[in-house]
Structures are given as C-alpha cells and as structure tokens.
Image (tube, rainbow, N blue to C red):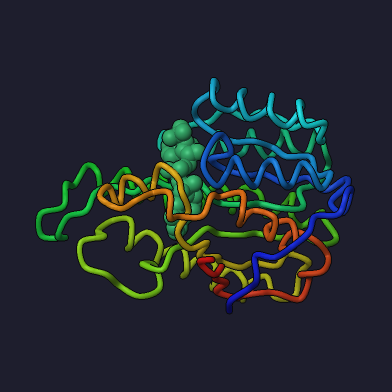
Length: 250
Ligand SMILES: NC(=O)c1ccc[n+]([C@@H]2O[C@H](COP(=O)([O-])OP(=O)(O)OC[C@H]3O[C@@H](n4cnc5c(N)ncnc54)[C@H](OP(=O)(O)O)[C@@H]3O)[C@@H](O)[C@H]2O)c1
C-alpha cells in the first residue's frame, strides 16, 4: 500500500506519546527522531554510537523540540537481559510505550549466497532480524499498557521481491516482513497495530554503500520522507494493521 510523503506535522500531535527509535543517531533514524520530537513525542533514541546520538540529541534541543532520552545499546551484542532492563526502564520512567520503530539495520555485502561470508551473514541476521524480534518480545507488555500503540518495521523492496546478490540483507528483510505480518495477526484484537514500511531510496550511508557508482544527489534526503512517520504514529493512522506500506520515490 503506497502512502503519500506529503504530510504536515502539527505541533503537539504526539504530545505525551513515548516512542522508541532504533538507529536514531543518523540516516533515516535521525530524520524520524527530529520530526517525532517536533510533533511533541518523547523519543527514546537507541543506538550504539554515543557521540552521534548526542549530536542528534543536541539538534533536537537546539530546534526547541521535546527533549529525547538517549539509550546506548549495540543490537549485535544485546541479549534478552538487556531488553528486559530496557522494558523495566520504560516502565519505571513512563509506565507505557506508544511506538516502537525498528529502523537500525546493516547492509552486509553484495555477494552470491554461494560465496556469502558466514560471519557477516550471522551479524546481519543478528542486527536486522534477531534484535527486532527480541526487542519486540520484551516490549509487548509495555506497548500493551498504551491505549493506542504502533510497531513499525523498516523494510525494503528487496524484502518483498527477491533480487540476486542482496544476500543476508534481502533475506533479513523478508524475515522482517514475516515477523510484521505474523505479529499483526497475533495482536489483531489488541491496541497494538503492526506494519512494515519500505521507505524507498534515500540519501544515506546505507544507500551510498549499496550503490557506490550512482549520483547520490538524485536521491531524496531522509527528512523529505520522515514527516509521514509522524502520521503513522498518530491516531489518524489507527486503522492500519498488517500492511506492507511503501513510500514513493519523488
Ligand atoms: N537508505 C535507503 O535508501 C533505504 C532503502 C530501503 C530501506 N531502507 C531501510 O531504512 C532503514 C534506515 O536506513 P538508513 O538508510 O538510514 O541506514 P544507515 O544510514 O546505514 O543507518 C543505519 C542505522 O542503523 C544503526 N545500526 C546498525 N547496526 C547497529 C547495531 N549493531 N546496534 C545499533 N544500531 C545499529 C546505525 O548506527 P551506527 O551509526 O552506529 O552504524 C544507523 O543509525 C533501514 O532499516 C534500511 O534497511 C533504507
């Protein structure tokens, strides 16, 4: 289902909402953090690099938006105990969670499966699939405390239609689509709505790594696409569940 990126954020439309964004330090995660904070949400910025998390945090404050919370965590090494601790911290500090955005991912490498490096395959699956699974599992109880909660999985076109040489990344996004759809059905009768989204191409480090020869200036900046994430977290999108969303490349 294609949704327009043409969305104007209204001040305070997400006031009092608590939303966790993974990979919030840069790329699309940074753009979403800025727009969600602009809309008044309390953002829990999860990422592994404290310096760049702090840079984005400072940007949010400089713009006068809602102050976020920094949560340094490396999703590759994180264990169920780390996610239980995160659940406890959210419960103690906010009492509930209203949004969970699984954005952090690595691209792995472009390689035929026949030759794919096994260690890199494991790392890609750990960060792109196992971490979102464990994080979601640990946070369902706090999402359940919200009267209107959202889980959003960042996907990709190569997680919907297979493309040669995309290796572990493509396979990981197929798995994300599977988790998203399965969870949306399991939680159908609850207040938690679950969707996946293919954001389309964006001018980020990941895109530069995947397409080193293209002119990056032709790719839209992530902040042209992030306002619609505010819409997806707002009550206006309450009916969406189990959808494979896609953003147009404008
Ligand atoms: N850009 C595109 O054209 C495009 C197209 C389709 C789908 N997507 C999807 O959109 C999402 C965002 O992509 P992007 O382009 O913004 O990517 P990006 O610029 O490469 O950013 C990836 C983010 O994931 C974080 N991350 C990676 N490994 C991590 C780990 N072990 N622990 C914690 N955080 C980790 C990175 O943190 P560090 O700074 O620490 O590395 C960074 O914040 C991804 O899910 C991607 O698959 C992107």
